[in-house]
Image (cartoon, rainbow, N blue to C red):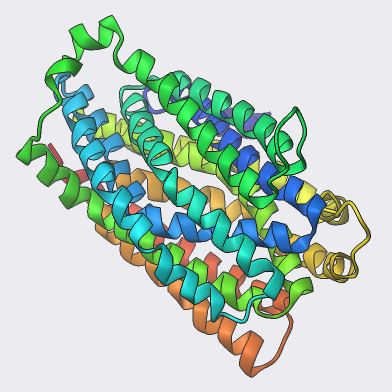
Length: 459
C-alpha cells in the first residue's frame, strides 16, 4: 500500500500525474486511433494475401520517411505554442502555427517529386515480385493526398500546445471512423464501393485525414479563437518566429528523417529474405506499432507540459511532469508486456489470410518469437519517450536528435551482419536490435540527470 502511495505521490501537484493525464489521455486516445487506422489497413489487406499486407508496410514506412523531416520540424510548434501560451503571449501562438503551415505547404510538392527515385529503389531491392507493384501504388496515392496528413499534424500541434487535446482526440476519432469504414468498402468492394485492394486502403487513409482537417478548422476559426488569440491576424510570414521554429525544429525533423531512412533500409533488408520473413516482420511491426503509438501520446503531452512550465519559468514542475510521464508509461507498458509474453500466437493469427497460405504458416513461428522478443523492451520504451519528450519540450532537441539517430543507424550494420554475413534468421536480427536499443536508454537518462535542459532559453 505504501508503495502505491509513493508511486502516485504528488498526483495533483503541478506536473503531477493528474496534470499530465489531462493532456496525455486525449493524446493517447488520438495516437491509438492513428494506430487503429494503420492496423486496419494491414489487417484487411492481410485477408487478400501477404503481398498486399507487406506492400502496405513498405509503402507506409516510405511515406513516413518522405514526410517526417517536415513532421518533426513543424511538430516543434507544439513546444513553441505552449511556451508562448504560458508566457501570456497568446497572439503569437497562431503565428507559430501559420509558419508551420507554410513549411508543410512548401514540403508537399517536394515529397511527390521524390516518388520516382523511391520507386526505382523498390524495383531494385530484391522484394517479392508480387509486392512491388502494390507498394508503388500505395505510396503514390498517399503522397498525392499527403497535404491533408501534414495540415492535420500542424493544426493538432496548435491545440496540443494550448492544452486543448480533446479537440485533437475528437478529430482523430473522426478520421479513424472514416478510415475504417472506407477501408472495408474500398478494399473488399463493399457498401456499394469498388474493390480497389491496396489502392482502396490508401484512398481511405487520405480521406480520413481530410475529414480530420475539417474537424480541426472549425474550432481554429471559432469566435473565441479569433478574439483571444487573434487568429485572423496571424496569416503572414513572421521572420523571428520562423527562425525559432527552424532553429529548434530542424533537429527533430532531421532526427525523424534519418530514423525513417534507417527504418526503410532495415525493412528492405528484412523483406528481402523472402515472403515468409517479410510476413513475419510485417506482423511483428504491426503489433510493435500498436503497442508504441499510445506512448507517443504520453511523449506529446509531456513535451507540451514541459514547454508550458519552462515558459512559465517553473523548471521543478517540468521535472515532476517528466517523472509523471514515466509512471503513466510504465503502467501502460506492463499490460503490453503481459500480452506479448503470454498470447503471441493469438496476436499473430489475427492477420491470417482469407485463403490458406503456406507463406503465412511459415511466418507464424518467426512472428511469435519476434513478438516475445519485443516484450523485452516495452518497459524501456515507456522510459525513453518520457525522457525524450521532456528534453524536446525544454528545447534540448539537438542532443535527442544525435542520440536517436545514433541508435537507429547502429541497427543497420547489426541487421546486415546477422542476416547476410552470419546468415541467421530474422528473429536473431530482431533480438540484436532490441538489446542495442535498450543501451541507449542509459544515455538519455544521463542527459536528463545533468539538468542542462532546465537552463535552455527558447522564447
